[in-house]
Length: 416
Image (cartoon, rainbow, N blue to C red; front, side, top):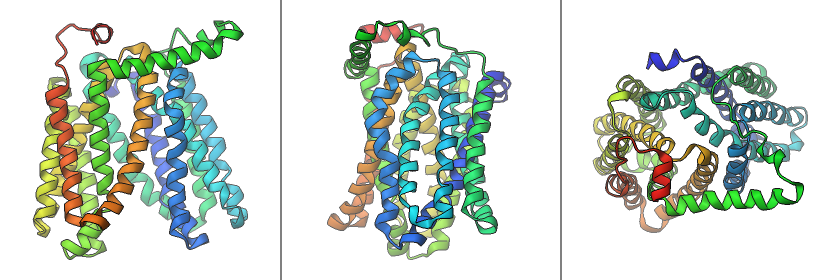
């Protein structure tokens, strides 16, 4: 794992992501609370989630076309700077709480910008490390997200308690600027097609854009490997987000415990994921991403079934730790497979469509989980969600073709 961080360009991208994620979690730690404090409405708080997801769902696939055309490093720099400007608009609400709609505008604009940054980062990363270090690099990215969350949540709460929302907003904006500066130092992975759009005749730009967009959708539909990965991501995300609104009710109504135990289980899950990211990164070059992702997802589903149907506190704590580790291992494996199986020139479009799909499925999963528990009961709905998580691993192992040694992504695309 250390050898990957010794690669200058990856280290810059990784550090920039860590700073940005920590800043985001600082703001997330307090903003929903502020919205609820101002409005007293859970609907108003839920509206933030819709504003954060909807633009990405609508723009993700189209944004991917531009990610494939433009220099991805420059795009990430520009997006981080724009996000810094956008988040500063929250200062308007700090000085005048009646300007609450600013929160929804900022959330929507940040989501729209993320529709560019997320596929750009996923497309850039494989160009910064050798193929045999890709699992380690993705494990470090997962670790990055965990560390950013663990640092950002308490720091955001502490800053808010001592100085107010304005300081949290400024620190989040500073984190975006710092991330932009770090990514600007990346030298490798620069696209040779950065000016391709400018070379098109004015009358042909729209038709060329739509043609490239359709080509990306055709690849997703016709390439067996990529279509399978979309199905796996969908099942995994749908089942996982179904669990989100059900975990706290299970702790209270089935396990018979309170908020302290709920927080304990969440902490154990997060910490075990951090340890798992380190472990996967340490042995990444010797792991098959396909077996890692499929086996870990199948195991996670089984562990969740046991955990929810054996409501004993020591069992819940133990399985929270093991399932947290399995979830991280699965995530690293699936991310690596997607980067390996998608041709470089299509990565922006495929990852853009994939991210839009994940956002849509996340929204649907949370809604179905909440309403489904009311309709069929809490435990049956938890079992359904657990089965979907496990099924994602089974589908991956059975349906994803084993890529022959020496086969390139482009060759796989042509056969697809």
